[in-house]
Image (cartoon, rainbow, N blue to C red; front, side, top):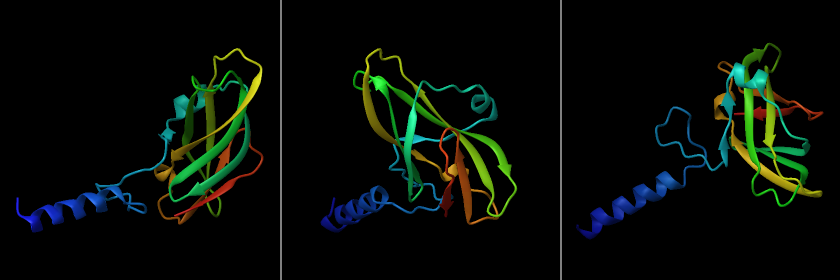
Length: 146
């Protein structure tokens, strides 16, 4: 392969990997979040979480980072999910309800703090540039602007 072709290929790959503010309609969207947010009313209604304390929420780009703690040994076996109801509450801006689910089978008494990030691109509301996210078990809503 000629040097110029190799250089063009390398630049194309670098652009694909470095995408930080991709449009949701672009096929090369790359998320740097740990997990995807699940939008499913049945899973939302039936979700239960182990004893968890949510200490902080932060949105950077399209990732919602949740800081949380629970009792356990080291947290290495914990499984987490962010689940949204498909219902959009009409207000200005609109609102969506979420649940953070922690599955914790660890039987130790230490308190472990962790953070996980979730891709929330699928929580955007058509016709709006922002939405309030109401996380069950957390006192304050967080505004997601896009």
